[in-house]
Image (cartoon, rainbow, N blue to C red; front, side):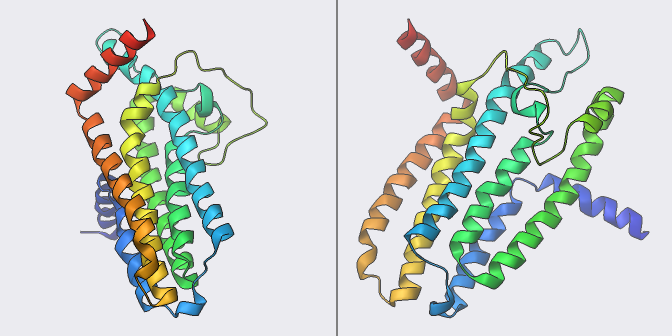
Length: 251
């Protein structure tokens, strides 16, 4: 097997595992905290607020992308037999081609920063960027195969990951808040749980005690409960019940 063939297989496997790749950062970050020198760990209310703001910014970008792309995905599914599929070019997609990947990076970059170990921040960020650039090359190849020359022209006009603020604004004709609820409610509270558990571990490493962590533990328990609720929302039956509930409430 040639090196080119090995790289193709590696890239395909990495793309298949793209949703699980960031999970490697969790044990890696906790191990980095455990072996780090306590006084070298970045900490403080302002620093934590900046890390949380970074992740929230990522979730905001993801919400705009999910709300824009979901109605178009349903339309493509309905017209699959009658015409070609159409890729999203409205809303945030008018500014960049892969807002979900940009959002994912900011969400996990917030966690990487929150760990607060300098060498881990550098190593984890470099590894994350390298892996996702490889994943994106595979993603773009699939998009070109699916959408053809129209997508290639759009690539020349729209940046991949960094939004183009000078471009034209395209108002989103249809926006799905239910898609955001189903897609990111669990992810949001899962990340909140991760931040809280990491805060408990940081507290232990800095103060050498578990005594002052019970408030954070209670908040983590609440986040875990909401995370489980989010897991239910992602199920189709519960999703349809949510549709009915919102429709009845509006009426």
